Image 1 (tube, rainbow, N blue to C red):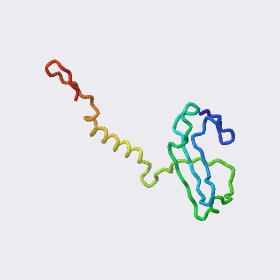
Image 2: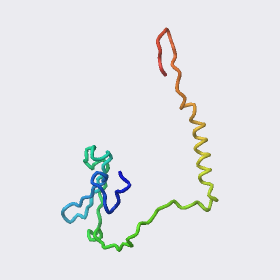
Image 3: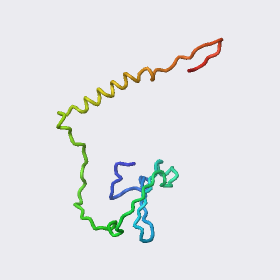
Image 4: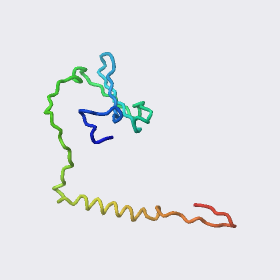
Length: 119
């Protein structure tokens, strides 16, 4: 997707989500997601489906006021641990890697009677 695709000018080939409402009074919205690169994909929008249903149905169409500005979301710092979570996670992952390392080695093939067998 191009960096020029925004909410104001989303290109048709950049969409990976389709939203449909069902007819009747059941208050359902179906969200379908496409996982393949468009436009070359299958464009079926059924790779992940979510059905949202409300009760009462009128709550789906509530007029929510908008501020009109984009909000940047960021992870909150872990002040209680002194900002050392990243170091702790690194150490845990390193210990896991050291323990798993023998499984990651490629097995050497064995030669028995002139025939090569893999493990």
